[in-house]
Image (cartoon, rainbow, N blue to C red; front, top):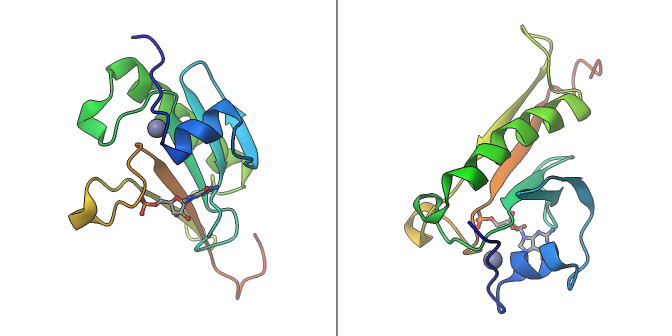
Length: 121
Ligand code: 5GP
Ligand code: ZN
């Protein structure tokens, strides 16, 4: 599918560089950046370079580009630990107001969870 943007969409503007963002990883079909109101240090968003409001609106080629990027970013943030070392993460993707979606351009949250008490990670 061709890249599709929506002029009034804040995340389309971020992809096009019309609104500044702290860019992390960019691929052919996705763009990732830090969340402006992080719920944890390192809270970031991975979005498709395609304007679709909800997951079911996206062509598969865009969806297929996203989880590998999320995985890469878990490594970049040192969250790729196995066992009870005190770090983990949530991957969150909201669809619709009733499900707490605020920005109507599909986005995957990666939210680090770290055990501050251990101080290890
Ligand atoms: P939602 O509730 O729609 O799943 O989450 C939208 C997320 O986008 C929120 O965590 C919010 O902080 C983030 N956000 C909204 N506007 C901007 C922006 O202009 N820049 C960045 N970096 N994040 C944004
Ligand atoms: Zn958009």
